[in-house]
Length: 106
Image (cartoon, rainbow, N blue to C red; front, side, top):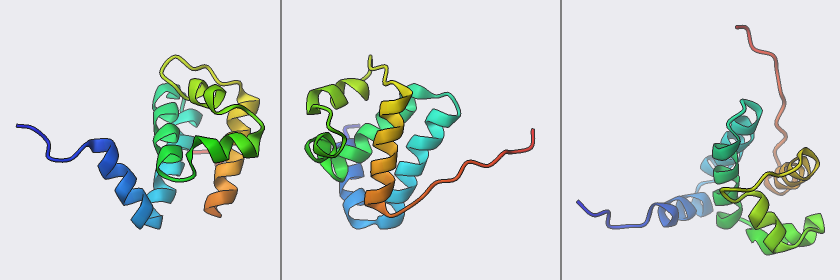
């Protein structure tokens, strides 16, 4: 059975109209990186950026080229921690959220 709407289009529409979902998507991306799931983290952040500010605004804010940012968060990208934290810090400011890391019991 074919889907009637593209998944990414559905996500982008919901991100634009639902602030709680948008914040949760950003949190999920950051949490994926912190738990070691870099591929999921890159995918979620890329989707979040595409649905919100876009890579052009992020490039201007971080002083990295649009192409470089897209490569960093692409399937074969390997962003340096410094660049990744710079991206996350800017996205948090734009979203007006601040994530905190807390130790969890094992």
